[in-house]
Length: 466
Ligand code: C2O
Ligand code: CU
Ligand code: CU
Image (tube, rainbow, N blue to C red; front, top):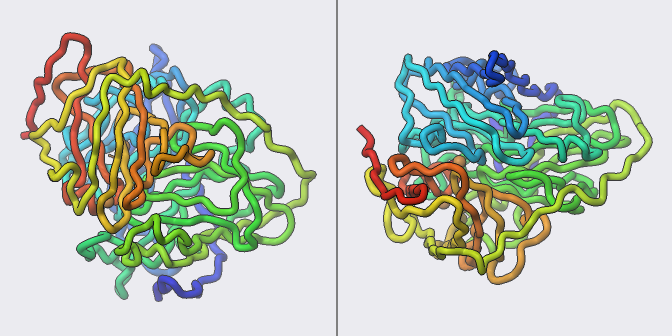
């Protein structure tokens, strides 16, 4: 029944792609935008005619797209109707540690949580997902994930496709493994974790997307727990990358492939003019950048993902030549350099402990972090609270598509990646932010650490979890 990994998919792409609805926001007298999310169990036909028990926010799988503008005050009311504790983390969002939704903000079953913050960052495609200590992989795999789109005036002014659900399409790509009774197979492999052979777009397998014809923008999230994708179009046509994790790039970057490790996002603009076009994940060609043990991570697999169907043939439109000015952070202004070694479920020879603060940093300072994967298998690296810039990868400047704002980066074995970041606005001596490998099995096994951002004159006073 399941489509076999590495083989030609057997499915026909004949199910309309579900587009996550925009979450309704209620604005109160003080101007705060209130969203309501309920996490609960349900049943989804990931494969047609097969009932699979799943988890979702305000639905049976995934969640609505939250949307807010830079400068907005937002409040989320999360009701946990799951049979166990969860958390909700705002991946890529710059916000106070106490609302970050990491392992220190558990929401017990049948209780609620009400984070509230001001959106202070540029337009970007962010996402939200659970982050309970040691349980993140399973919660995400069962279906808990959604997008959070931030808008701002600069990005609105760009001539990019921007009609949500029409030519501006959220696309969450994930993989599942189904047992013959339709339930999700949750057996982990000891190295990669959950790797599925059923590729799922916005919650279902075998979808097509009808587009007006002409330019369309896909906001792609690799929402898989472990699988990496090497995306392209079946006829190898060129598309343009316009945004990375934290917002638009300086200018559109032409590409025929784009690699996404778990947690990363990319916005791409594709011209769909004549015949249906297949979005596909191709085998990774650069084996050296993957490590000797990478085969087990599915990097040689190829999958059809989504069929794009034009419904008209409009006149071709040019993309803007410039999108944004991204000021480069200056490494000579860094007050601190840190080194992180990724190796077999450990960072710097230690597994995550919720009662150990790995280091503290200071608000309004710049730091340079070197991430080194000394393992023989793939890992990536995600930092909470900030969007960072990549200074270099293996001592070479990053390619254009990685030169914008990022919060998650693939770290090839043996090729150190240097990041620069600035900690701003929020200090808290009591509650940490996380950094970790976003292959969620690795994260759950302890490939994660915690840091405090201290305000001026503060000293660490971490509260331990109960
Ligand atoms: Cu996407 Cu620490 O998370
Ligand atoms: Cu995060
Ligand atoms: Cu890892």
